[in-house]
Image 1 (cartoon, one colour):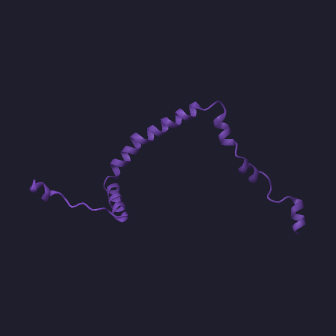
Image 2: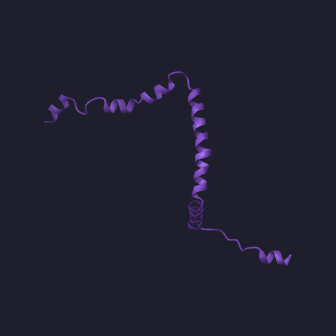
Image 3: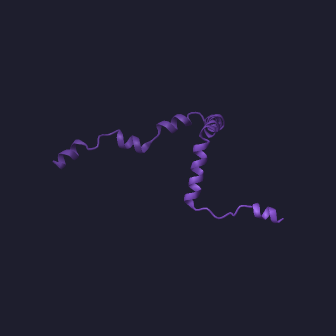
Length: 90
């Protein structure tokens, strides 16, 4: 039992800088593996989820979501100052 106790490392709490340092080292050493996981697992799963969500929308909801923007339409569809307001300012 004393042999196992001597071989065990002394663990201590890590600071935020040490945690970030180890995390960055993991990403830099294994970037290709992580990139493959994203491309072959995460990306197809996200595309599938988005396709299911879009197919569950009622007819016309997607086009309405893309075109109905009252703030943008109101702000950019008319001139900033009317001619009457310009005349009053001058």
